[in-house]
Length: 283
Image (tube, rainbow, N blue to C red; front, side, top):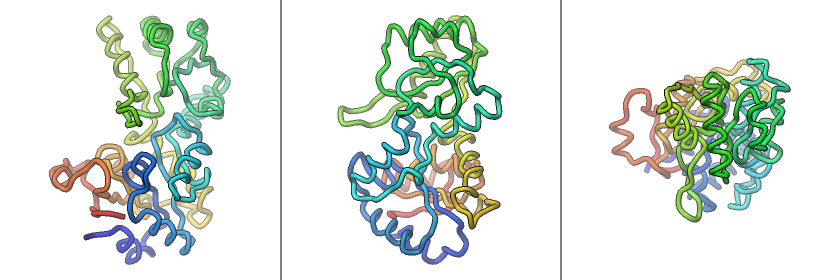
């Protein structure tokens, strides 16, 4: 059995930091993945920098750290990087600070959008006053929010439509929930049927903004790494699409663990842009 911890031991001097996916890599729902505790304890003993990269923008970094820590892994909010954090750079680059945006669903408490500088409303009656929309997750009021957003985009197809989590769905105790990405594509499909094209901006894995945010923040988070070299940063995850494709696009060393949604057969038959550099049976 090939373990990531053995690879880390042999190649530690070739790496500057480790970036872990969360669900399917370190935990499965609220259950710890075997060997995750041993690996993270070893990293702490070595004082080796590691962070957790998640498309969960429904929970603040503080809340996500609490959820993960409840499994037994001691994680601090400073070690969590959420797709919601990528809003900061997008809003700065596009000079959107202070602009009024409509927020669909939950986007953390406090809202990642507000923390990034947007003026946010969740009142569907105010959507016509907004310059764009940022899509969160969780509970939507289907009639007021979905209809409101549909009509807003019909009138403003070029308005920014920002989606922190591009995932179509996500697991929860009751089955599967519709993710922000799935909701966005559903609404954009309706708008297209009506004759208008809307291009969302996806910020989370596997899209570039979240990986660019990681590389931009790394010197601040790891003072010994003032000029990050992507090839010296390992992205470890269980998804060929979000973790491996995204890490490959960023130039990182991609490591697939077969502890989640990907089988060896799927990995062996993956297209080049989703091929991991290394494959491990477990952490």
